[in-house]
Length: 404
Image (tube, rainbow, N blue to C red):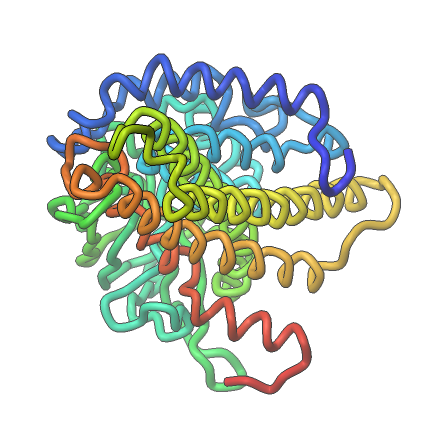
């Protein structure tokens, strides 16, 4: 597979996920959005389809794909196709793998992997990543949640916010970043700790009433003298922030894939509507004012998709190189590609939904039409997994500029 072409296997996999989304999600998504319903059964059917195990090895029930097979690209394709029908279930998969499974798979102990991964990889359970805090936002190093080691247990106190997959009926754990001391340089020591659902002192508060992503499970979390075993530390003590940054790079590409799915939906909806809607003796698609806007959507779609696939292919080649498959892109190159893809696609998605709403006119303002839901869903793409401002800062730094 090159950076810009999908293999036959990838195209077949895309069709499988597309058929699933069209048959299983599309008929119900409007009602689920209105009622803020999290369809647990559908999420578990996504697991039955193997979507949560695309990047996991066979020993934990995953697909066991070789790096050369492009497992990360497969995950991005699945997110894109789900996002084309519903952004909420797309982010459920993205967070379930990228923020739920990946920290354990990448940094967990053998015991942690054996305990938690089989159910997570199978989609029977979900996991979340508790990073963002009320006073920290994009400055993850400003974490205030604390974990103190007492008699072989971590005692956690603090709060997290905007945490996806953290309070559903099938959520099994949250991986939490917390201050565990002070480093030799005097900076806060940030570590990552597993907190199982149901642990005394850990509460997933009432779900948010959000602008969009209404089907997604999102909660604030509180920890009050919450005790977990010392063995629940994930990775090396004091390396939690660095671990998070590594996980986040993958997440930015996955968010880009979600944005690509949204732009594709806008193109599909606008083409169909522009051929059906009649005015002044013909379809509105014959008017340049409409046709040119739809053409702009198509350009944004192609550019966004290529940037996303390129970054995903770079990740797969890095994995292949790490397993002895020759030279691959550097971490720096991948970070830059991830930020470029995330920035361009997320901002294009917001623009695409605005254009689509305009093409639909008054009907685009009505909740009975999908463009209204996509319009609401789009904005968070510019915020989650690093805001547009953060991406611009990272891209500028990648160019050697000393931006703060």
